[in-house]
Image (cartoon, rainbow, N blue to C red; front, side, top):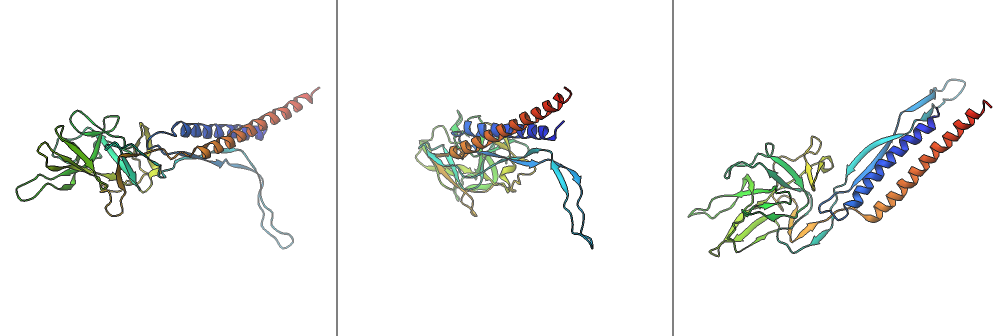
Amino acid sequence: MLRSMYAGISGMKNFQTKLDVIGNNIANVNTTGYKKATVTFQDLMSQTTTGAQGATENRGGINASQVGLGSKLGTISNIHTQGFQQTTNNPLDFAIEGDGMFVVASDLVPDGESINLNESSTAYTRAGNFYLDDEGAIVNPQGLYLIGFGVTEETEDTPETINSDVLSKIEIPTDAQSFSVQTNGTVNYIDAAGNTRIAGQVALANFSNPAGLQKDGSNLYLNSENAGLVDGLVTPEADGAASIISGSVEMSNVDLSEEFTEMITAQRAFQANTRIITTSDEILQELVNLKR
């Protein structure tokens, strides 16, 4: 059989995968916190017909002659560039200005104890559309708790402060008159007596390689061995960390003009590979007709 036919088949499979990725990007063009994906290809092994020869006293060197056998899928990478911010004026909509991700978890330990992220059902997200549940805890649309730093108890001598050593869910009392979120992630509320109190502070997780995170659906990412989770959660606006913008959400970073251009390119490349298969089939037909 002709090698060109198998090369065309490999190209068709690869560009079909690329069209699948492009279609998913376009489908999520308005998905909150979505990060687009890109596809790269690699060439397959090449069949050597003649090997390379070095130069001698009488003649120069000769390059190797190789015939490629097609292409294969290289990578499908997530591009974690900043998406544009959409203003919602909802105080529980958070956008991250900079690097970092929100931490959400379930299966929390009892109140007053620090959360062990390794033992909790922990996920990470850039989608900042949060809500209050019936107990006043800040949760995402799947009911996972937004993780932040806890608060020390108020005494007669010292007011309550943020305790960066304790991770917990952030709860606003149901009888609170109002609440607000600062750019450093601190959640303040006014209690029934009219006093300003602290509910907690939103914590962020940083990754040295965010493209290594695994998508888990529902705008959630899971940590992986190649994501490079930085030890310890960070405080917004501290040591160059990102800021929290309340009243806005980060939208998808998909560029429709770029995706349509890539779609046209992939479509034409797919057609070209089908033409290779058609031409190879015509050559095989000519070989069969030699018997006549």
